[in-house]
Image 1 (cartoon, rainbow, N blue to C red):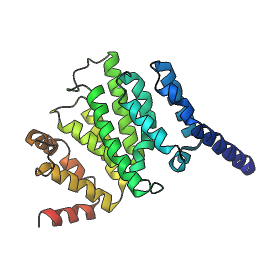
Image 2: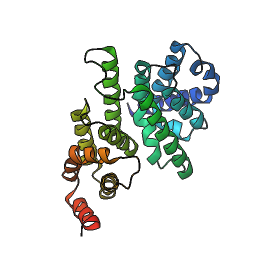
Image 3: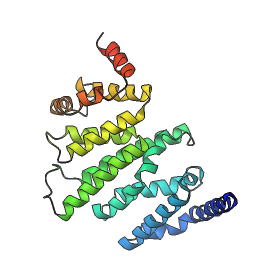
Length: 251
């Protein structure tokens, strides 16, 4: 059984490597105006991830494929129904900014590109007010599906990028329609981190929001943050982290 598994793994890697190597030949598909062509290329990429998702990181076509993913996320020809399929791949792509198999300068560039793309994606695809879509409509279900996939990616990847995005979404509204789901997911994310330094970074970020050190957050955003999740976050981190936070900013 072990030998058969090794053979399947080796053949799978060779198969995926062959697909990635030929990726430039697929450019007509993901630049096509036909949505079915684009869906085909997304499905193909998804299948390669099922076989061996780590292979892409070290492959020569990494830049080509990762930039294709970003471009599809903000492709204005595609609706949120299609882009929800793209979010299935989010846990992999969002974790690249902390992947030590990537060179530091490459991680930094990817992180910047990805943050910018995510904000464009949410601005283009999500409503200004979360209550804009009526419950039971296709728009509502698409919006809910996208939010849930982002939350799933947050918990699977422990991505600070997604954490920042979700905090921003919560702070922009007095009452977000999916607020309870988002807060529950963030709480699980914080507990799962189980790392003093990472939890401290989160508290530092929240502190920067509350005390006006983050220029993206206006006074109403800061009040929303204080009301919605500060207490929950403080009670979710390790006791040692909480003590250090108090010493750093209060003592």
